Amino acid sequence: MAGRGSQRGGSKRGPSEDGHGAAASAPSSGARFRASERTPRRSWWNSELDASVKEEDKFVVCSYNVLSPHLLRASQYLYAKRNQSSLPWDVRGPKIVDLLTRCQADVMMLQEVEADAFKDLFVARLEPAGYSGHHEPRKGKSDGCAVFWKKSKFTAEKIRRVELSSDGGPVLTWGNVGVVVVLRETAASARRICVGNTHLVFNEKRGEIKLAQASILAHAVAEVIAEVGGTVRTVPAVIGGDFNSTPTSKILEFMIEGRLRYDMLDRRLMSGQLEVGGKGTSPGKGYVVGRTFAPMDELPPSVRAAVETVPVAAERQRGKKKGGREPEVWNEHYVSHPLRLLSPFDDRGVTSYQDRFADMVDYILYSEDQLTPTAVLPLISYQQLVAEGGMPSPHEPSDHQLVAVRLAFRKEPSAL
Image (tube, rainbow, N blue to C red; front, side):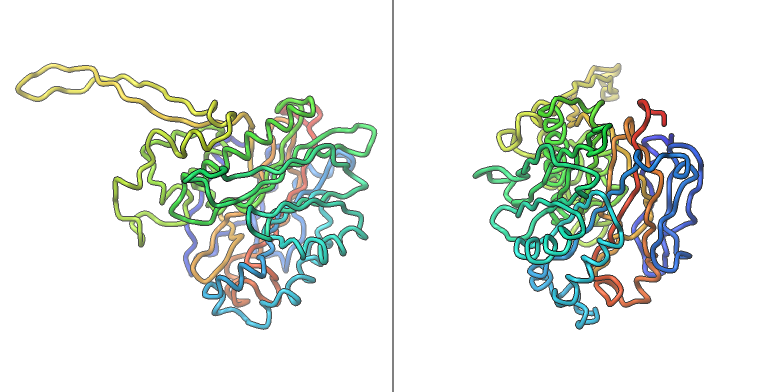
């Protein structure tokens, strides 16, 4: 199994950098996969493990930000250089559903789904293909997150809407939402998974808000698992969506490591969307996260309970005139979650490409003790996306790529 820390790496994309490597083919249960520009379009890359796992022990999960037509119209400046005939929703929508149906995922996590598109397009097309779905709009907005599952594979045992904002609070006001669904296999084994889908706030300078939202979602997944009589060690979690954070960010570090020291971090740099020394990142004390990353009364009890203050004692040198040493005590501040998550993807891919940004921000994270990846759908290379005129394009109907992984239930904890 690859180490937890090894799941991160990579860097900002540059215009001449491809950011991809050859596919990994290690036979271990921790085999990792990389996007490849050698794939003509997109076809599954399997690990050697895949052939040895029974089909009934595997399931496919995808995540896709479909680019809400309302948000596209509100951010036209991001798509000024695109093929304008590729932008209307009546052109993009059917292509998006075609892409989803070709993927044949057992679980689909979608973001930026408009309420009317959920009913008139996604349900209308996916239900006849054998799917059931659920949609939750953002607070005060029509777009939100949707989860679909293949009825022949899973039934929904519990569904919860997760508010990532507070009622009347001055800080957590963005209205982002998450959807948590417990799915049970229709097969006799009746194994369960807990799916968490979200779209974290975009604002690249508010990393502390993303951290709060990610914390709320992770703890909500653990709570829902407990509500159906399971534990995070018996019911695996699959968390996905658009995190608006890069693979080397503090947000992904928190999700994968399960704990993050957040005090003294510059909130503008926590998501990795802005580079150190870049525009708007000059040093400023007002941007440093202090003892709390969000007002405690705006966080749910489970997150408040996971915030930890650790006193640290050390010695420091006194001034030359006084001589000797004296003790110094300060506090370090941490937040944690109980899930043990990994990502199956190479960290150097590009999942979102706009005129002002290109990097990986879309993820599928899985419980490492109960699940293992056996195949991934490789990403289109950055160079190819550039050659095609960016995203959306006649080839890619959103400004995000669909990400997908085939997961397998482990036969026993940490061993397949």
